[in-house]
Image: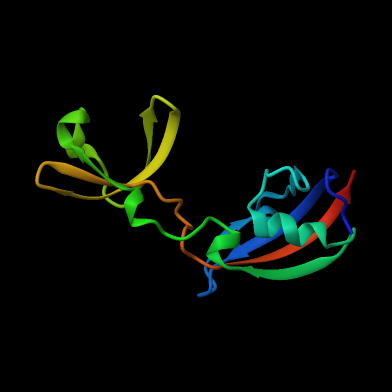
Length: 140
């Protein structure tokens, strides 16, 4: 098994329950590199790799709590349109990057209503179960 604190390289393919692929390191031709147990990965992925051996392939299904969390309706912000220059050009349903005092924050504009933008700041995979095919290709 991969020890906590070890650097690993792993290839993976991530899919939703309907089979839709949302990410794949094989397609990029480069495995992901991270330190096991350092909090660099979603919890379920990190835990799965920690139980694997070099060269092992495994498929794991993660519930939302082990991935990007449950969808939180409180993370849909209602912001006055006047706070956004050119708000009329805000694309509906397309991820955008907001500038905040704490740094950039991804959001998706759900709708414009009553002179307000409804901005969803949940991760795009929040509330979804994820399946990963994982292959450990290097342990350092």
